[in-house]
Length: 88
Length: 198
Image 1: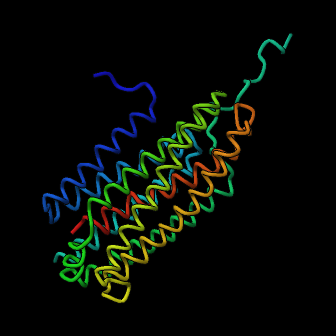
Image 2: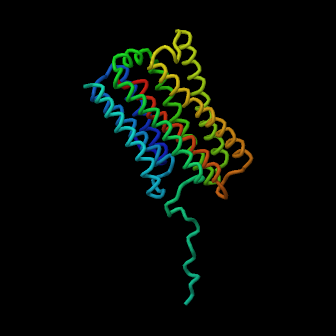
Image 3: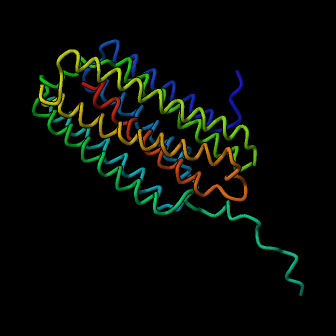
């Protein structure tokens, strides 16, 4: 199988695979710390791809890349923190 | 010495720059902050109501949530391909790819309306419990952003059809596209958070 030449097509395929994985994990009743981390990790992967390749911030001024990737990182970190607090 | 041998580069594409209007990027930041506050409020409230949130979340339709995600990422992909085509003056594919984005956005809204109808038919509302207060307000807040996004994509599509965008000008097209990707980005976090993670 050859990879699509267009980076947007590759990104779309990766995001599709990540979404189906999250859906499959949810349907299989996956729960707990590792499931939360995997699902959030997949969401972050998708988020990074949207920010860098769809919003085209990969070649934008560093400040804007930091702002958007920082938003994603902060939200994901706080979600993990409060899921952890909820599990203890 | 002849200095005209080295003309300035024809485009500034190599230089780091934002695609789309600077104003939309500030707007996107503000929108992401609003979504972010909502997401964190959900996570904090859940931390103190874990059992109730998990029980209520189990009643959500994960399949329709995953379908929503696939529609949004496919729509975003279509918009990216449309911008690429417009930059290369390939206007027919540009219109077609924008059509993909628009159809995906509309399909998202239709799927959401069916989801809400099923919830209302089951007697669920914002007043049912704290989880459903978050579920309805978060997804509806996002829903309204998709409505605006679909309107924007429709306007872009009409202007593309008239030949309004091309290698001479993609500024408005990129601006609208950036907003649409923000709507996608917010859902990418919302879907696992509200529908799946427990």
